[in-house]
Image (cartoon, rainbow over all chains, first blue to last red; front, side, top):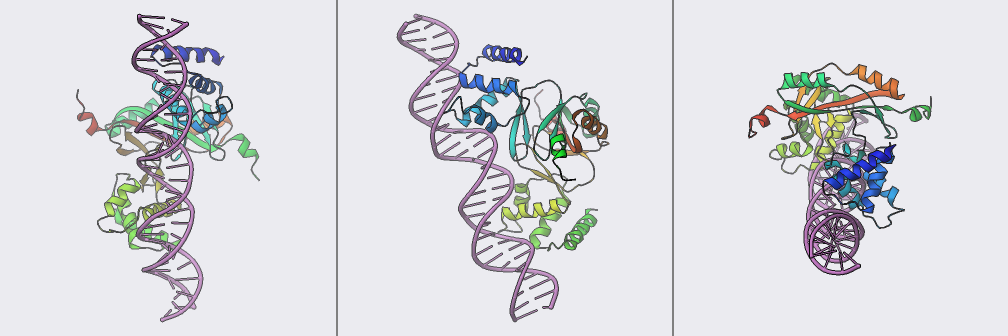
Length: 145
Length: 145
DNA sequence: GCCGTTTAGATAACGATTATTAATTAATAA
DNA sequence: TTATTAATTAATAATCGTTATCTAAACGGC
Protein backbone atom coordinates (compact mmCIF):
# COMPACT_ATOMS: atom_id res chain seq x y z
CA UNK A 1 0.00 0.00 0.00
CA UNK A 2 1.10 3.54 0.63
CA UNK A 3 3.59 2.33 3.25
CA UNK A 4 5.99 1.57 0.45
CA UNK A 5 5.73 5.04 -0.94
CA UNK A 6 6.10 6.54 2.51
CA UNK A 7 9.23 4.52 3.25
CA UNK A 8 10.65 5.43 -0.14
CA UNK A 9 9.95 9.10 0.50
CA UNK A 10 11.74 8.96 3.84
CA UNK A 11 14.75 7.37 2.17
CA UNK A 12 14.74 9.93 -0.61
CA UNK A 13 14.68 12.76 1.92
CA UNK A 14 17.49 11.27 3.96
CA UNK A 15 19.46 10.89 0.77
CA UNK A 16 19.34 14.62 0.14
CA UNK A 17 20.23 15.48 3.72
CA UNK A 18 16.79 16.12 5.14
CA UNK A 19 16.46 14.99 8.77
CA UNK A 20 13.46 12.95 9.75
CA UNK A 21 11.78 14.60 12.71
CA UNK A 22 8.55 13.35 14.29
CA UNK A 23 6.60 16.34 13.00
CA UNK A 24 7.99 15.93 9.51
CA UNK A 25 7.21 12.25 9.49
CA UNK A 26 3.68 12.89 10.70
CA UNK A 27 3.01 15.45 7.97
CA UNK A 28 4.49 13.24 5.28
CA UNK A 29 2.61 10.20 6.44
CA UNK A 30 -0.64 12.14 6.62
CA UNK A 31 -0.17 13.30 3.04
CA UNK A 32 0.42 9.75 1.88
CA UNK A 33 -2.59 8.43 3.75
CA UNK A 34 -5.23 10.73 2.29
CA UNK A 35 -6.80 11.24 -1.10
CA UNK A 36 -8.30 14.54 0.04
CA UNK A 37 -5.72 17.08 -1.18
CA UNK A 38 -5.64 18.85 2.20
CA UNK A 39 -4.78 22.48 2.88
CA UNK A 40 -1.90 23.40 5.17
CA UNK A 41 -4.40 24.27 7.85
CA UNK A 42 -6.23 20.97 7.54
CA UNK A 43 -2.94 19.14 7.98
CA UNK A 44 -2.18 21.31 10.97
CA UNK A 45 -5.55 20.63 12.57
CA UNK A 46 -5.37 16.90 11.91
CA UNK A 47 -2.04 16.60 13.69
CA UNK A 48 -2.84 18.97 16.52
CA UNK A 49 -3.94 16.08 18.73
CA UNK A 50 -0.63 14.26 18.47
CA UNK A 51 1.53 17.38 18.38
CA UNK A 52 -0.18 19.88 20.69
CA UNK A 53 2.47 22.52 20.26
CA UNK A 54 3.33 22.17 16.62
CA UNK A 55 3.44 25.47 14.77
CA UNK A 56 1.60 26.11 11.54
CA UNK A 57 4.90 27.43 10.21
CA UNK A 58 6.31 23.95 10.63
CA UNK A 59 3.62 22.59 8.35
CA UNK A 60 4.44 25.18 5.70
CA UNK A 61 8.17 24.64 6.07
CA UNK A 62 7.84 20.92 5.58
CA UNK A 63 5.46 21.25 2.68
CA UNK A 64 8.07 23.41 1.00
CA UNK A 65 10.75 20.79 1.71
CA UNK A 66 8.56 18.07 0.21
CA UNK A 67 7.77 20.20 -2.79
CA UNK A 68 11.43 20.91 -3.44
CA UNK A 69 12.16 17.20 -3.12
CA UNK A 70 9.52 16.51 -5.77
CA UNK A 71 7.33 14.50 -3.41
CA UNK A 72 4.34 16.81 -3.32
CA UNK A 73 2.53 19.14 -5.66
CA UNK A 74 0.95 22.41 -4.58
CA UNK A 75 -2.43 23.27 -6.07
CA UNK A 76 -3.17 26.98 -5.89
CA UNK A 77 -6.53 28.67 -6.19
CA UNK A 78 -6.59 32.43 -6.19
CA UNK A 79 -6.86 33.81 -2.72
CA UNK A 80 -8.12 30.54 -1.28
CA UNK A 81 -5.75 28.19 0.52
CA UNK A 82 -3.39 26.02 -1.46
CA UNK A 83 -3.99 22.28 -1.43
CA UNK A 84 -1.30 19.62 -1.45
CA UNK A 85 -1.20 16.43 -3.45
CA UNK A 86 1.26 13.61 -2.80
CA UNK A 87 0.19 11.75 -5.93
CA UNK A 88 2.89 12.69 -8.43
CA UNK A 89 1.60 10.45 -11.20
CA UNK A 90 0.26 12.27 -14.23
CA UNK A 91 -3.37 13.04 -13.57
CA UNK A 92 -5.92 15.83 -13.68
CA UNK A 93 -8.40 17.16 -11.14
CA UNK A 94 -12.13 17.78 -11.08
CA UNK A 95 -13.12 20.30 -8.43
CA UNK A 96 -16.55 20.77 -6.86
CA UNK A 97 -17.55 24.42 -6.88
CA UNK A 98 -19.94 23.79 -4.00
CA UNK A 99 -17.88 21.93 -1.40
CA UNK A 100 -14.39 22.25 -2.85
CA UNK A 101 -13.76 18.52 -3.04
CA UNK A 102 -11.05 17.49 -5.50
CA UNK A 103 -11.27 14.23 -7.38
CA UNK A 104 -8.51 12.74 -9.53
CA UNK A 105 -9.11 11.55 -13.03
CA UNK A 106 -6.90 10.05 -15.69
CA UNK A 107 -6.51 11.52 -19.13
CA UNK A 108 -3.62 11.55 -21.58
CA UNK A 109 -1.55 14.73 -21.19
CA UNK A 110 -2.45 17.57 -23.56
CA UNK A 111 0.79 17.67 -25.49
CA UNK A 112 -0.87 18.60 -28.78
CA UNK A 113 -2.34 21.67 -27.22
CA UNK A 114 1.07 22.61 -25.85
CA UNK A 115 2.54 22.27 -29.32
CA UNK A 116 -0.12 24.43 -30.89
CA UNK A 117 0.41 27.08 -28.25
CA UNK A 118 4.15 27.02 -28.82
CA UNK A 119 3.67 27.44 -32.57
CA UNK A 120 1.17 30.25 -32.40
CA UNK A 121 2.80 32.29 -29.62
CA UNK A 122 6.52 31.60 -29.95
CA UNK A 123 6.75 30.61 -26.31
CA UNK A 124 9.10 27.83 -25.26
CA UNK A 125 6.38 25.76 -23.63
CA UNK A 126 7.24 23.84 -20.48
CA UNK A 127 4.04 22.76 -18.77
CA UNK A 128 0.37 23.37 -18.40
CA UNK A 129 -2.37 23.47 -15.85
CA UNK A 130 -5.78 22.02 -16.51
CA UNK A 131 -8.62 21.43 -14.11
CA UNK A 132 -12.32 20.92 -14.47
CA UNK A 133 -15.08 22.43 -12.34
CA UNK A 134 -18.54 21.18 -11.58
CA UNK A 135 -20.77 19.65 -8.93
CA UNK A 136 -19.66 16.46 -7.20
CA UNK A 137 -22.18 13.61 -6.86
CA UNK A 138 -22.87 14.46 -3.20
CA UNK A 139 -23.61 18.10 -3.92
CA UNK A 140 -25.82 17.14 -6.88
CA UNK A 141 -28.05 14.97 -4.69
CA UNK A 142 -28.29 17.54 -1.92
CA UNK A 143 -29.69 20.04 -4.39
CA UNK A 144 -33.34 21.01 -4.23
CA UNK A 145 -34.72 19.95 -7.58
CA UNK B 1 -11.59 49.27 -32.87
CA UNK B 2 -12.08 48.83 -29.16
CA UNK B 3 -14.06 52.08 -29.00
CA UNK B 4 -17.09 50.13 -30.11
CA UNK B 5 -16.68 47.60 -27.37
CA UNK B 6 -16.10 50.35 -24.84
CA UNK B 7 -19.24 52.20 -25.88
CA UNK B 8 -21.22 48.98 -25.77
CA UNK B 9 -19.90 48.22 -22.31
CA UNK B 10 -20.92 51.65 -21.07
CA UNK B 11 -24.42 51.13 -22.44
CA UNK B 12 -24.66 47.69 -20.91
CA UNK B 13 -23.67 49.07 -17.51
CA UNK B 14 -26.14 51.91 -17.72
CA UNK B 15 -28.80 49.39 -18.65
CA UNK B 16 -28.31 47.53 -15.39
CA UNK B 17 -28.28 50.71 -13.34
CA UNK B 18 -24.57 51.27 -12.96
CA UNK B 19 -23.62 54.93 -13.01
CA UNK B 20 -20.77 56.03 -15.21
CA UNK B 21 -18.29 57.96 -13.08
CA UNK B 22 -14.99 59.34 -14.36
CA UNK B 23 -12.98 56.80 -12.37
CA UNK B 24 -15.14 53.94 -13.55
CA UNK B 25 -14.87 55.05 -17.14
CA UNK B 26 -11.12 55.38 -16.87
CA UNK B 27 -10.72 51.88 -15.47
CA UNK B 28 -13.02 50.40 -18.07
CA UNK B 29 -11.36 52.20 -20.90
CA UNK B 30 -7.93 51.18 -19.69
CA UNK B 31 -9.01 47.55 -19.64
CA UNK B 32 -10.32 47.79 -23.18
CA UNK B 33 -7.19 49.51 -24.43
CA UNK B 34 -4.64 46.96 -23.29
CA UNK B 35 -3.79 43.39 -24.18
CA UNK B 36 -1.65 43.08 -21.08
CA UNK B 37 -4.05 41.49 -18.57
CA UNK B 38 -3.14 44.00 -15.88
CA UNK B 39 -3.33 43.52 -12.12
CA UNK B 40 -5.50 45.78 -9.97
CA UNK B 41 -2.38 47.55 -8.82
CA UNK B 42 -1.14 48.11 -12.35
CA UNK B 43 -4.45 49.68 -13.24
CA UNK B 44 -4.25 51.82 -10.14
CA UNK B 45 -0.74 52.98 -10.94
CA UNK B 46 -1.56 53.69 -14.56
CA UNK B 47 -4.42 55.98 -13.64
CA UNK B 48 -2.71 57.65 -10.70
CA UNK B 49 -1.57 60.52 -12.90
CA UNK B 50 -5.08 61.44 -14.02
CA UNK B 51 -6.76 60.62 -10.72
CA UNK B 52 -4.27 61.60 -8.02
CA UNK B 53 -6.62 60.75 -5.18
CA UNK B 54 -8.24 57.62 -6.48
CA UNK B 55 -8.26 54.80 -3.96
CA UNK B 56 -7.11 51.29 -4.73
CA UNK B 57 -10.43 50.17 -3.24
CA UNK B 58 -12.16 51.98 -6.08
CA UNK B 59 -10.24 49.88 -8.58
CA UNK B 60 -11.26 46.69 -6.84
CA UNK B 61 -14.86 47.82 -6.48
CA UNK B 62 -15.15 48.59 -10.15
CA UNK B 63 -13.44 45.40 -11.22
CA UNK B 64 -16.04 43.53 -9.21
CA UNK B 65 -18.82 45.51 -10.88
CA UNK B 66 -17.40 44.70 -14.32
CA UNK B 67 -17.00 41.04 -13.42
CA UNK B 68 -20.59 40.81 -12.24
CA UNK B 69 -21.72 42.47 -15.44
CA UNK B 70 -19.83 39.84 -17.42
CA UNK B 71 -17.48 42.36 -19.00
CA UNK B 72 -14.26 41.17 -17.46
CA UNK B 73 -12.69 37.91 -16.39
CA UNK B 74 -10.50 37.53 -13.34
CA UNK B 75 -7.42 35.33 -13.72
CA UNK B 76 -6.10 34.03 -10.42
CA UNK B 77 -2.66 32.63 -9.77
CA UNK B 78 -1.88 31.27 -6.33
CA UNK B 79 -0.82 33.97 -3.96
CA UNK B 80 0.16 36.37 -6.74
CA UNK B 81 -2.12 39.21 -7.78
CA UNK B 82 -5.13 38.49 -9.91
CA UNK B 83 -5.08 39.72 -13.48
CA UNK B 84 -8.04 41.04 -15.40
CA UNK B 85 -8.99 40.30 -18.98
CA UNK B 86 -11.63 42.25 -20.90
CA UNK B 87 -11.53 39.81 -23.80
CA UNK B 88 -14.53 37.61 -23.14
CA UNK B 89 -14.19 35.60 -26.35
CA UNK B 90 -13.26 31.95 -25.86
CA UNK B 91 -9.51 31.75 -25.70
CA UNK B 92 -6.67 30.29 -23.69
CA UNK B 93 -3.55 31.82 -22.14
CA UNK B 94 0.15 31.11 -22.30
CA UNK B 95 2.01 32.53 -19.32
CA UNK B 96 5.72 33.31 -19.07
CA UNK B 97 7.19 31.88 -15.89
CA UNK B 98 10.00 34.41 -16.01
CA UNK B 99 8.29 37.78 -16.50
CA UNK B 100 4.65 36.82 -15.97
CA UNK B 101 3.49 38.05 -19.37
CA UNK B 102 0.21 36.54 -20.55
CA UNK B 103 -0.41 35.89 -24.24
CA UNK B 104 -3.74 34.84 -25.72
CA UNK B 105 -4.02 31.93 -28.09
CA UNK B 106 -6.93 30.31 -29.86
CA UNK B 107 -7.82 26.67 -29.53
CA UNK B 108 -11.10 24.81 -29.71
CA UNK B 109 -12.60 24.35 -26.22
CA UNK B 110 -11.79 21.04 -24.54
CA UNK B 111 -15.30 19.67 -24.42
CA UNK B 112 -14.24 16.06 -24.97
CA UNK B 113 -12.08 16.21 -21.90
CA UNK B 114 -14.96 17.61 -19.90
CA UNK B 115 -17.14 14.74 -21.03
CA UNK B 116 -14.57 12.15 -20.08
CA UNK B 117 -14.17 13.73 -16.68
CA UNK B 118 -17.92 13.74 -16.15
CA UNK B 119 -18.14 10.06 -17.08
CA UNK B 120 -15.27 8.87 -14.94
CA UNK B 121 -16.01 10.95 -11.82
CA UNK B 122 -19.78 11.42 -11.80
CA UNK B 123 -19.41 15.17 -11.49
CA UNK B 124 -21.88 17.44 -13.25
CA UNK B 125 -19.21 19.31 -15.18
CA UNK B 126 -19.67 23.02 -15.77
CA UNK B 127 -16.40 24.53 -16.89
CA UNK B 128 -12.68 24.15 -16.94
CA UNK B 129 -9.51 26.08 -16.59
CA UNK B 130 -6.53 25.52 -18.82
CA UNK B 131 -3.37 27.51 -19.17
CA UNK B 132 0.08 26.86 -20.51
CA UNK B 133 3.39 27.88 -18.99
CA UNK B 134 6.72 28.54 -20.61
CA UNK B 135 9.23 31.19 -21.61
CA UNK B 136 8.08 34.07 -23.77
CA UNK B 137 10.19 35.06 -26.82
CA UNK B 138 11.71 38.02 -24.98
CA UNK B 139 12.78 35.97 -21.99
CA UNK B 140 14.20 33.27 -24.27
CA UNK B 141 16.49 35.71 -26.01
CA UNK B 142 17.66 37.31 -22.78
CA UNK B 143 18.85 33.96 -21.53
CA UNK B 144 22.57 33.22 -21.30
CA UNK B 145 23.05 30.21 -23.51
C1' DG C 1 -33.73 72.10 -5.23
C1' DC C 2 -34.72 67.79 -2.38
C1' DC C 3 -34.26 62.91 -1.22
C1' DG C 4 -32.69 58.39 -1.48
C1' DT C 5 -29.23 55.66 -3.48
C1' DT C 6 -24.56 54.93 -5.43
C1' DT C 7 -20.12 55.75 -5.34
C1' DA C 8 -15.48 57.27 -3.90
C1' DG C 9 -11.95 57.62 -0.72
C1' DA C 10 -9.57 56.58 3.54
C1' DT C 11 -8.38 53.31 6.41
C1' DA C 12 -8.92 49.26 9.20
C1' DA C 13 -9.37 44.40 8.99
C1' DC C 14 -8.59 39.91 7.20
C1' DG C 15 -6.43 35.53 5.94
C1' DA C 16 -2.88 32.90 3.92
C1' DT C 17 1.76 32.67 3.84
C1' DT C 18 6.61 33.99 4.85
C1' DA C 19 10.40 35.92 7.61
C1' DT C 20 12.74 36.26 11.86
C1' DT C 21 14.79 34.65 15.91
C1' DA C 22 15.97 32.00 19.85
C1' DA C 23 15.82 27.48 21.63
C1' DT C 24 15.87 22.60 20.67
C1' DT C 25 17.06 18.47 18.29
C1' DA C 26 18.97 14.92 14.98
C1' DA C 27 22.95 13.09 12.80
C1' DT C 28 27.63 12.40 12.95
C1' DA C 29 32.25 12.02 14.74
C1' DA C 30 35.19 11.63 18.65
C1' DT D 1 28.28 7.94 25.20
C1' DT D 2 29.18 12.46 24.64
C1' DA D 3 30.20 16.55 22.07
C1' DT D 4 29.60 19.19 18.00
C1' DT D 5 27.26 21.35 14.44
C1' DA D 6 23.92 22.30 11.34
C1' DA D 7 19.06 21.61 10.71
C1' DT D 8 14.71 22.20 12.64
C1' DT D 9 11.06 23.81 15.58
C1' DA D 10 7.90 27.06 17.74
C1' DA D 11 6.40 31.53 18.51
C1' DT D 12 5.45 35.58 16.68
C1' DA D 13 5.85 39.54 13.75
C1' DA D 14 5.54 40.97 9.16
C1' DT D 15 3.85 40.95 4.47
C1' DC D 16 0.70 41.43 0.77
C1' DG D 17 -3.41 41.21 -1.88
C1' DT D 18 -7.96 41.92 -1.12
C1' DT D 19 -12.27 43.07 1.34
C1' DA D 20 -15.10 45.50 4.82
C1' DT D 21 -16.45 49.61 7.04
C1' DC D 22 -17.62 54.15 7.32
C1' DT D 23 -18.19 58.99 6.02
C1' DA D 24 -18.73 62.35 2.67
C1' DA D 25 -19.72 63.53 -1.89
C1' DA D 26 -22.23 63.00 -6.33
C1' DC D 27 -25.95 61.58 -9.08
C1' DG D 28 -30.84 60.85 -10.91
C1' DG D 29 -35.64 61.13 -10.43
C1' DC D 30 -39.19 63.85 -8.54
